[in-house]
Length: 112
Image (cartoon, rainbow, N blue to C red; front, side):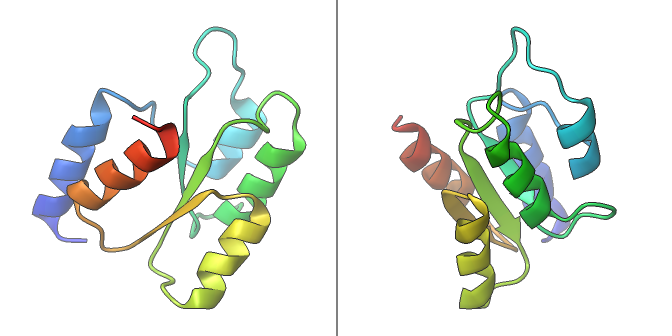
C-alpha cells in the first residue's frame, strides 16, 4: 500500500476505530465494557496469532461473536477469501486498497 493511500486510510478510519497492535492483544487483552466496536478490520497476516485464528476466536466467544469482522490481506487468491469467510469474516479487502474501497465495504456491512 502506498504511503499516501495508507495515510488517507488512517485518516478515514481514525475517528471510527480503536487500533490494536496485534491480534493477540485483541483476543487476550480486550475487554468490552462500554466501547464495543461496531466492526473489526482484521489483517490476516499478523505476527504471533494470524488473523484467521484471531477471527475464529472472536467468533467462538459469546462476548464478541456478533461483531462483524472484515479481512484485510495481501493474499488475493480466492482461497484466502474463502478461508477468511470460513473463519467467520463477513467481508474481504485486498491489499492494496483505497479509502473509497474501505468506506464502501464498511458501509455495506454496517448498512449505512
